[in-house]
Image (cartoon, rainbow, N blue to C red; front, side, top):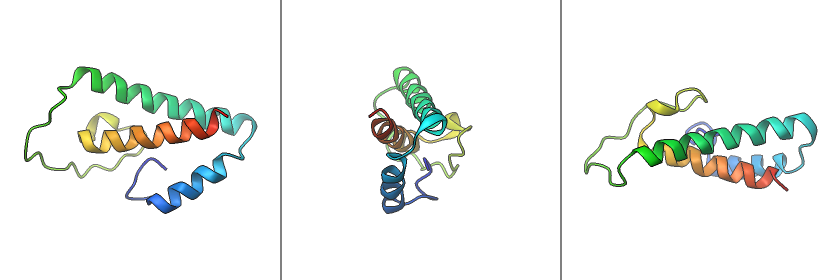
Length: 92
């Protein structure tokens, strides 16, 4: 669900609605996963320079849940934004 090339914006929105109704262990696991991806991004962001080199090529690596460090800065931000949305839905 964090890979925007596999789950488009519309499908992700529907997934968030579905996840809002999750209960029990599944809800907790997905919330913890979102927190972990958020933590990974913030840790990376604190180490990186704020400005990316102009003309940086987009990385073609697709996020699979285990290869966060291999992603481009742009892809990392996308994963972070989706993780925040998932967490916000599940924390209620």
